[in-house]
Structures are given as structure tokens and as C-alpha cells.
Image (cartoon, rainbow, N blue to C red; front, top):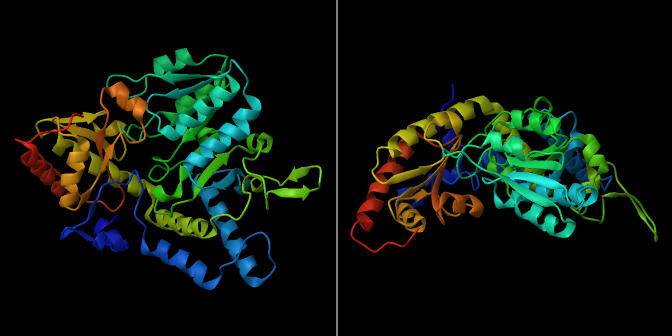
Length: 414
């Protein structure tokens, strides 16, 4: 049985008080908190077998390398990749997208080619393609949204042409919380001859992913959004695509041979991992994966959906709340973005912080989407495996305090 109160005992930071009140952490889409076992595992590496990997034959170096590579295998199993050669360690989902942009896009895209993305993308899935478009003369097309914020699949199919070489799309919107129909998008794109990159930063922490069943070409995600440390990300790629790509970084440990005149790259995935990696971070991520496996993603997913359903019902009873995206839980995951009357999101977040409640306020690294919605900023509450309905109740109560504070005061424009 999924016991959220027992799970909370594993997270030291949840015992923190803010302004004398218990921390209620609702900013999980930005980063999740870490269980003690992950923190302890990172400390154990530094205390007991700190050494560089892939270089030394001494005991410490061999042990560090073995555990580092075991994590690569564990991640491959987590997303059902064919083998661990498909798993590249990066510093985050952002770097993973950039690696595809420059390692694959720079090499294979040419002037007149098109990339298809959506209006709900995070900046990390917009800016690298804009930079590439300037360099290569390629065209970026944006798929519009329906009135409820969901992806307009009819427009998607119309925009998909023989010139479309890449479709790069988020699985779950970091603002709207919408779960996009990734399998359908991949199948449709492949029929048109395009490859597909999936931004799984918000989905992989909660939704069981099978990259072989999806037939995904690329999948990117970050450790810190799924109980792991910051500074670690994953690029999954089909082996043939990774073999064709160029490395982003040149240096040590990513080569087979270096002469005065030329270098020969190492085999995948190592040709993409030049220099000393975030070894402690990878090892900590491995423990996070183990923790998630023990809980079961299907249970985490169900818990989050229950919380979102409960929160939506409570929010919709508050006069002046504007929720972005669908107002039913069946189309969204663990994210609810909203605005409250004409109170600026930063003011809302500041008052909530006085109550010990942490939410996100701003453009959520999705300015094109906010422009489309006709706003400059929004509030965002996002949940994870340790949040409770009691925390939601306190969040709702705190919103009433926000209203009281600004009832007769001056407000900044949203």
C-alpha cells in the first residue's frame, strides 16, 4: 500500500520550518527533494571510493567505474532501452537537447529543412533550435493549441510535411500539465519521414516510459526532477542515430586515438562524455532510480493524479482563480498553473512563502506560451510523491490570506 506519510519520513528537508510553519513544498516541477538514501549514497562515494572513472586500475577507480556503469544499465532498464549504449550522461535535459541540436542537427540539417515544435515548449526546447536556425537557415514551425490548452493535432498533421526533418516536443507541459499523445505523435511523424525528440523532463519522473514501445528516436530527462542530484541528465538515442552524431565536447576519455593530425572518437556512448563526469551525481541518481522502482511509478502516478483532482476541485471553488489548461485531471499530470484575480504571481508566491508554502511564480521558462495565453507570468503548484491532501488544504487556506492582504491594496499588473 502506498503510504505517503511513511514516505515523507525519508526526506529530511520536509521537517524544515519556514517562518515557524512546516514547509509545504509545491515546486516539484522545478526540482524535487531528495531522500536521505540519495544524500547518503553521494556522501558514501566521496568518503569511501572517490576516484576518477574509466582511467585507473586501482581499487578505487575500478569500484567507481563499476558503480557508475551499473547506473547506466539501471537507467536503460528504467525506460526499457535496448541496451546501455543508448544512454548518454549529460548535465541535464537542456544539455541533452543541445547535444542533439549540434551533434545531429548541425551535421544533417540544411537550409530549407523544417523543425516542428509546439507553443507549450520549455525554453530549453526552443532556444537551441533558434540558434541552429540562424546558423543553418532552417525553419521552425510552432504547433498551435486548442482552447483548453491541449495540442491541436489537426494543425500538427497539416504542418508536418516532407520538409519536416525533426519533431521536438514535450511529453508533459511544465505550465499546463497536459500529457501529450506521444505515441500518436511519434507514429505520425515517422510516417512523414521525421525523427522525434521527446522532452521527458516532466513525465519520466512519474509515468512509466518504454522507449521501444514508443519507438522514440531521442528522449531527454533530468535527475533532479526525480529525486536525484542536480547536474545530471540523460540523452537516450537510438544506436544508429548516436553512431552518426558528432560529439559536442572534445577532450579526454571520449577518444580512441589522438595524433598530431587527427583524433578518432570512442564508441557510443563514451564519445559524448568528454572530461571528468559528475560521478557522484550519477551514483546518486542510481539510488534515486532504485527508490522510485521500489515505490513503483504506477503508484506514484496514481497518487499524483489523485492530488491534482483534489486540488482542481478546491481551486475551482475560489472566486477569481484562473486555471490554465484543462480543468479535469484526466488530461494533466502533476502541474497546475493559475492566476488569482489581478494579483501579481510574485505577490501571491511571496505571501504563500510567509505561510511556509513554496510555489513557482514567473514565466516558467515558457514565454511564448505565456504570450499566447495573454499573460506575462503565472503561479504554478506542482506535486510529487510526498505531497498530501492536508498540504493542499493549507495551500487553499493560504490563498484566502493572499486575497485578504491585497483586498484593498495596490496590485501590480499581471
